[in-house]
Amino acid sequence: KFFAVRSSRGEGDVRTYQVTGQIFFATAEAFHAAFDFREEALKGVVIDLSPAHFWDISAINALDRVVLKFRHHGIAVEIVGMNEATATMVERIGTHDKPGATFAVGGH
Image (cartoon, rainbow, N blue to C red; front, side, top):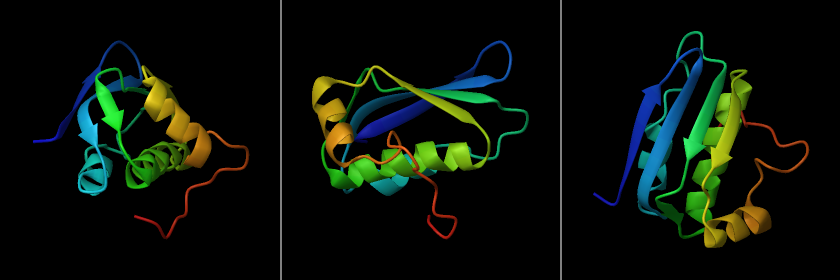
């Protein structure tokens, strides 16, 4: 397995997802599918990318879709622990951190 997503819910209404491993074109769909976008009474999500690496545009697009889909459901998202290479790609090609970014309702 190239990557893993583990989740935990601490006190209150925030869930933390810890992503480990390699995210790239072959794992992007499975990465997106690893998140629960309809969890009841959830106000916030923390996505910890400390032990993860995003390799290509497909991976960054999957991250964008995850963040924007949570936001579409009214859930605030914080991304922590992004390594320098991943952060550079998000800055260049990501959309979730740009003004006006929205989730395409017809999207995956």
